[in-house]
Length: 159
Image 1 (tube, rainbow, N blue to C red):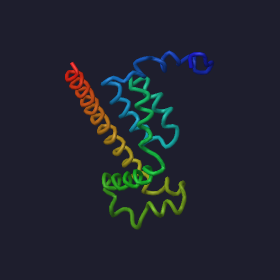
Image 2: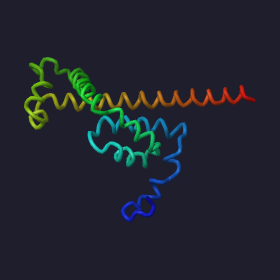
Image 3: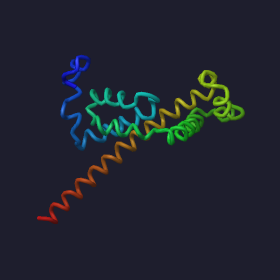
Image 4: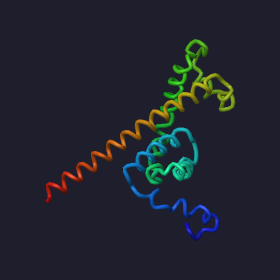
């Protein structure tokens, strides 16, 4: 990567050891960043998470692997759930007659972007990504502490 003509200007930043080392601070940042980019960016999730990991000092492998939370099996339920959460947050229960999600799928993407379901889905995705990022951050922080405590206990038992 250091030898590449295109990547040479940023290679020193991307290859910084603190971005690749697994530490108690960088891994939760990477998990939270991966959750956000995995949910909010429908394409190029890993490059976006790697680029955003640079200024946030997040672990690049953790951020890249966490983007796989969204895949062809989990994305449709996530988007439907985001629509319902956004609908609840915007209080548009009576404003949208019928089933806007089914109607939007049948009519195409441009019609859906102009419909009333798009703001609810966008707000829902923001809420879901924020809650997943916060949950992933704290869950990985607790998991890190449990893992280190177990290593210390096993070392103490051996000695």
